[in-house]
Image (cartoon, rainbow, N blue to C red; front, top):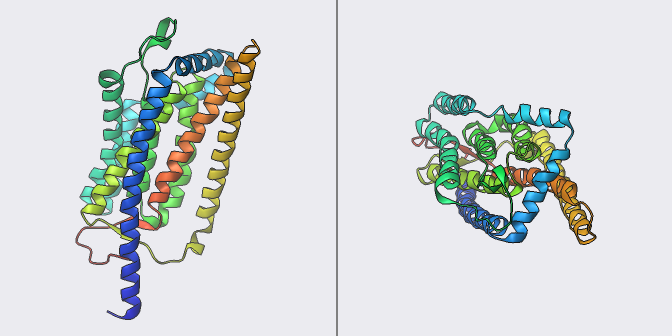
Length: 308
């Protein structure tokens, strides 16, 4: 092995080690974040009042906007999830990586399984405020948001490195809006979407760890990053959109709080804030997981090339 080859191999091993640390850190952070969101939003009177007011504010949404949100919401069904899992699995098999296919399908189906178990069998919503109807039911985490984000993460994992940017362009621009759509149509609260982002991150990081521990991931050293300028521009634009959503959400929540203190209607501002913050949360989760896979790709376990 030449000096250059040795340096490349060491660089690749270092990238893989840092990636494993990132997946561990993100998994733990997502677990803590989801727990905090649940406790603050569901087990405090202030949290329940805030989110219930935001749901009431959603009744003021224009009918055309609600129909558009419903159309996107209904793209996620049991059939579409199974179809997505099949497509992800086929991509893994076409790359002659059976366990990659299993990991990708596991992210989609596993994320949904965790969400449904949490929502219907583990988590509860105490009655801390007087409210009737469906608003009293526990809806955390959001199954639709989990489905969208899990598909996004599974796509990132199974796609070849050179096609990852194109795949993320289509899946990310669709997936990050699902959380906001669920708020618009009053199907979910803000906390439901944020918890779903956390669930998807946890499952995807666990799958990534599995692939790394079984020697199915390698570092990508060449070509240089300059070849993927469009990908970088896309990430910057998505990051800017996420930052704008976060800023708009915070502003609307503050306006809602100010209106409440002045005995003015606050529901509309709180709804807008919830919608923007839901979108910002999904963008942050998407970019965070993409970052953990920076300059990495999957490979067959028997492939001796550990760095490309």
